[in-house]
Length: 349
Image (cartoon, rainbow, N blue to C red; front, side, top):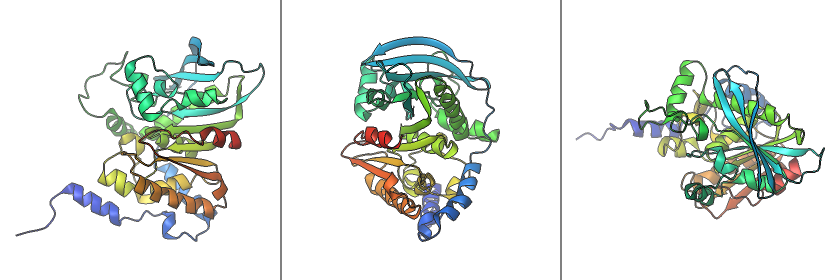
């Protein structure tokens, strides 16, 4: 009787468990931080492949409204060749003329409504339920706290979903568009991450044109897949002075290879060969970083999420920046803790 393994999945899990990434900081925690970052960062960024060509924004104002003490504007901008994005921006309605405020790019996670939930669109029971489930409207809440907030959909979500008006593309059937976009992007030498980061840069460029935005005080935040985007946006764009990663802390061997709790919008070829998630987050040092972890999160389980955070903590300590790292460990499910965000961004922006 043979007991040899015939499961390819078990093969990948075992490979991942024994794998030590080339620039895994935890293997040599006493090493010089600056030398580690100088060696790792360019190789990590190179895994993203090419970044798509930038184009003029050609902004067009679509709507203006007020609610909840906030002023909202809806625009459409070109974020690349052959692709546009709807852009939402919110600010306090009574902002004094000439005053400039810090601005936060608010990335959404996976879900049918994309940026709309983050920016507070609760116009249907389904939208209300999503916001309530994840405390998801941090774009609205942070604007009510006095910041300017702005958002676009990353590809495949919200108004840029192939399953939403006006797109209605059915050729994928039940397959995940995140994975299909990744396949298409890598065939062209890019990744979904490099495309989404570029679109976020375009949105940030546009946000900085508003007279009430201080372009020298920018932050970025996001939940889940939005935490992925917040992380990579900050790694690729030094304009972001402070970062909040919400429920996107874990170890690749656990949430990736064991649980398959990831998709094509979160990965790049050879990334795990180089680094694990705590290394990616640690590369942000010495920039201020707030990490939200839900004790009852069923997407990124608290045990490995905290193991990730403790490794990030050691990297920030090596960088001499442990005072710029904060944890919001909250007793909730997969969502925004929201307990430290306003004070964090207020302090660092």
